[in-house]
Length: 338
Image (cartoon, rainbow, N blue to C red; front, side, top):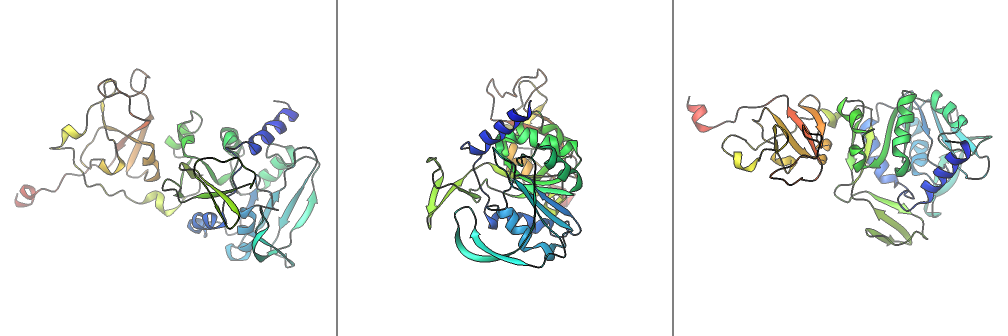
């Protein structure tokens, strides 16, 4: 792809309805809390977050000293002209007042560290040569990249072997480029996600109406029921044991066999049987509970014939085939007596 086409595709993605979402500060705080000890001594790069508006920039600027950062860098993007980068260092002391909500210039005034601005020769596209040079120097990327460019964005992070904590569409786990990374424990879900409708993104006031939109105090919000954090940074939730209470033994009729794979259908994560040793097909929401010490990921969606998994000729919604590494023997009264 030529440089001009790359720039055009980024602009198109950022201006498309599916990509024009700005993360709220409270949602960033909720997720970053679980990595607070990780950031010490790190150079954080925000390569899809305009420092004029970004709450990612506000969060790391406000918490620069608390987190013990080595450096914070954000790049501004403009489709048609060269832009700039802004850097915060440990010796940065001067402050400037800005609005709490930069996108709409509303909310309380807050004080941010005044960054060092350096002009760029290019337009700030995360794939530009200058942005890649910054990426090479940084330790971790934290951002909300354009959902439509998620495959390319993640590929770049792996190409340069970077840590990351980013927001994406939950359905990205179904991509052929993404699921193998999850299966190989190279990428996993973060701690918080919006499956319960808890993550509301700020959208421009002139954004067209879509389902899941609301306006509060003159600010327009949009919820995306399947957005999630994706990361390769360890967090405590990733190794929490999933408590299982259901049993396969004696309830076999609740777990039908697949037509085209030697495994059973489990329609809900809460119904995963604790005593089944074979393959089980579970909803993709399972990955929010996935503990690699407890479960093995086998494959995604397909049976032995490489067609969608089916039960009695019908294919359930996307399934992930898993295996319990630590199956338990059900506790029964008769067992206790014995």
